[in-house]
Length: 284
Length: 261
Image 1 (cartoon, each protein chain N blue to C red):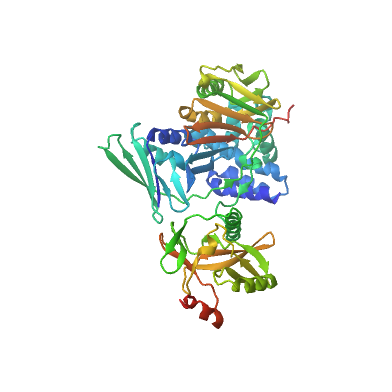
Image 2 (cartoon, one colour):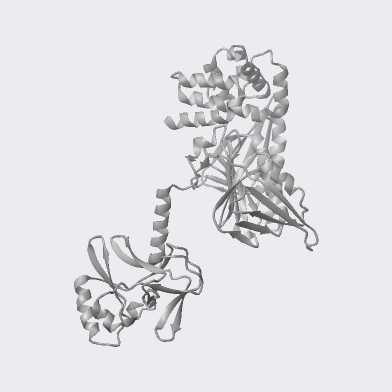
């Protein structure tokens, strides 16, 4: 019911210039009449204005001696066959606003679009909606294992790396750091295992999500690109955990705007003396 | 930056003709998928929903979503300055409050550009639910236009009654009454002239002819028109715009006259 009333006032905003008729309907709104009838009212005068067009408008102006609502009512009668049986009532019409609005609306008025389709208050999105939409598109990208705009390139001296072949905006999803998601304990065990073989690179990425530490183990060659990004302390990407259906995923997002052709780099985050000794490039 | 070029400019001219009498002004929403417009007429009885897909334009560029508030009467006036063979390009900057139309003749030796002020339009956007309609009638657009025109001589409103035998349009008024009945006919040779009815349930609805006559301004856009109806919901009148989109008109049914019956 509140909705109907707001619709009414909204329309009034548009049609205020249409004068006494409208004023009278404002009065009815203040009384405790059924809001449905009240709601029809502004429609009548409005569609009347529209329907009759400019020509009738001038006629109305020449017949200024008569009160406007009455003129409108009569004209409507004359033109509308449906209204014929009610003609005798016409004289009393302008005196009683309530019956006026009621049987006019029933004789020849159309329903309103807004009776059927809800008004979206705005087609602009609220911040919350935008956040939600962003989240869902992110989830979609992760679940579809999207790896668009990336290219693997062989670099002299540091092996494979990934280069952007489309521009990324700051904050854009770049790629998932995909691999086995394992808990801390398993990860430690695996790492000791891997350390025995010097040919195996570092593909374990530890991260905290919520208040638990996880590790993505991407040691196994998988064809996914996330594991191939090289390290830089001043890289253009950053890791970010995202939770989808209670499972954390580790993704890389653009830390700044990235141009086409730039190598994608992020900070592996390993600062331990031991690692630095083993892999001096971590200082870069 | 928004830029869209349509080689077949006449299509846009027809689109404008199809909506400008019903809507004074409207907001074109442009995004990477194309241009769309949704607006109610001033009495809020009918609604126009128009879509032009990006694929139909060559090139189409929309860097960021934008809403272009346009006075359609003015736009139509400007489009009248384009020849039917001209290509039409619509351009709008990200910041500016103007829109530019460029008309180019097919051999490129005549180029005209027109700039127009944009407007701030406050509009209600309606959420249109996906509906399965109980009757879907396809008929030649020109036939529908003729029916609406003829019946508006008789009365103000038309009752559309759709059964499995066919669809009946009737009107009555001071001078009498009239009925037009179309039977289904699937003409294989002339697809454009076929009348087809897909029906789940018969329905009868009454609409103001005045609005239907406005809708019929879209007749040049498409050889066929689709009427989708269910009892007690708005009628949908759809015209395809070539391969690139559609214009849909929604019309609320008339209020039943129950007081005296």
